[in-house]
Length: 297
Image (tube, rainbow, N blue to C red; front, side):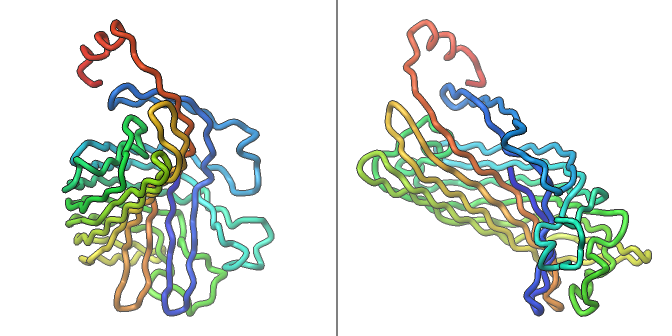
C-alpha cells in the first residue's frame, strides 16, 4: 500500500517527499463471485531495517468494481514519516533519512464513477480476477468525489535547515486540514493481445472545492476556500485466461491542496500495487448451491 505527502515549491522546482515506513506483504486470498478475502503478512526478509524510522498505521482501502460503476474508499491513519529525498533536500543530515516520528497523516475519501460502456469494458477482469475481457474496449466515466485530509506535527513540517527562500507561505506550518467535494470523470481502456494478454489504463480527474485551515508553530491561523484538483490512475498488465491469471496492477489517487498565488502547496497520495497469480477452480453443484444462498456473495 502507498501513501505520501509532498510539499512543493513550483518556482524553485523542489519538493519535500514524506513517506511512511510501511512494509511489503506476501499473502493468499480467494474470490467467489464478487466477494474477495485476502490474508497477508509482512515477513522480515521482505522488509529489512534501513533507517527510515518506525510508522504505526491503519490503512483501509476498498475498491468496488461492478458492471457499471467503480467505488473507491480510503481511510488512512499514519503516525511517523520520513523524508524520502533527504540527500537532496538536507544533504548535511548525518543519518540516512530525516525522520519525523511526530508527523501524523489522516486521509478519508469516497468516490463514485459510472461506466457508460460496462457491457464491453470490465474493471473486474484485471483488478478482481473474476472475469475475462475477450476484446479490446473502453469506457468513459463520470461521477464525483468527497475527501478530508489532515496532517500535523509537533513543530514545523518544513525542515529549518532549508533556505529561507523555499516554501514561502508553508514555512512554520505544523497543521493543515482540508475538506473538498466536486465532480470527477475520465476514460478507461483495456487492450487485448493474442486473446489473453492485456494492458489496462484508466485515468480520471476531478476538481473539488472546500475550506482549508492552516496552523503555524508561532500560533498563526489561516482559513480559506480553495479549488483542489485530484486524479486517479489505474494500471494493469498481464495474462488472463479462463484457467489462470498472472498480472501486475496499480491504483494511485492524488489530491492537491495548493496556493495558486505563490505556487506552493501539498499533494497527498493514496494507492496500492499488487502482483497476483490466480488459479481458477469450478465449483461443484453442492458448493455452488451453498454460495448462492450467501447474501454478500
